Length: 357
Ligand code: CA
Image (cartoon, rainbow, N blue to C red; front, side, top):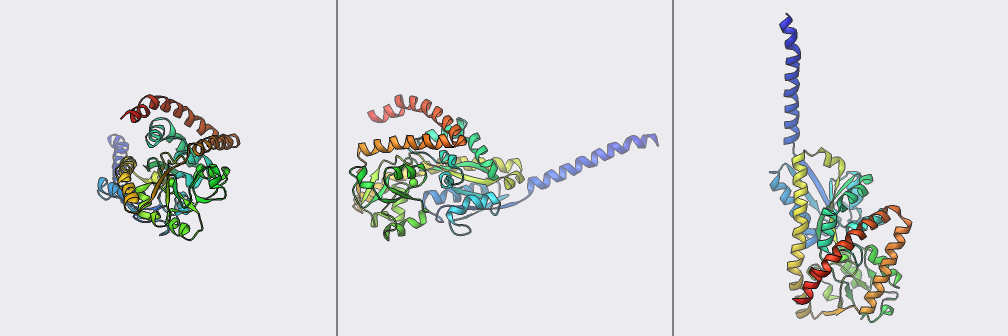
């Protein structure tokens, strides 16, 4: 009898272990089906294909345990509804650009890019290795969202115009699609910025709703057909020197995933983040040649004094937002500290090198 009493706790212990093993096995093997909404037209080259490639990678790496169906802008939610849809949990995931949400979180713009700020390489280093990601995560936490880098366009073009820009006078009253802080700078320089989704730009420019537009760079702009409705293609894209895109994940959905699936999602996102930049680097010049040689687009550089004006205004806009927004200010400080460090080295490395080759 006494022996039996000793056995009971042992048997209970064994049975509870067995239960844990079964429970763990259930979570480990459970299948997940997610929806991913994007701010891009379905299957748009570059931007729109990045989440498709991400979904395929996750599918393959997880042997189908996590299936992610990608929806283009307007299929489930409109482009500018992506943040709210993922935040509320009506879908599990989104792909877009952090500066689209500046109305909710002004500081989010640092994680897409700010005028005269980081290049693609530099923003990757700040986010992945310079403390940026932790700041970004805490910024999105109140919205029940986990952000991850989701690609980069590289340095963009300033955009498409039907009149020449000879001085700041040329942009007075000009209605241009230009998002983020670049839009605010454009406004202070006398222009009229508007932010409309990519899919609506062609019609807006064609019908005169806007006078000018920026989008991305030759590879994406050629696909949209702006060469048919605008004469001049201006560079450089001072307003978007290396725009990072984002994946956002609903935190409840994220927390349900077993660790190995979380690792797969993170790894696939990292792969796509680099892959999209490689795609733009590989494709942009070919598309630019086609725009110039086949479509007779006139490539033009912004006058130096106009660029200088934009630079001065950009700094005052950033300083002013920081003065009125503590969250923005503390991120701006991290950003500036990292920027001064990488820029110092890049001056004597990449910058010096590209001038001599
Ligand atoms: Ca752009």
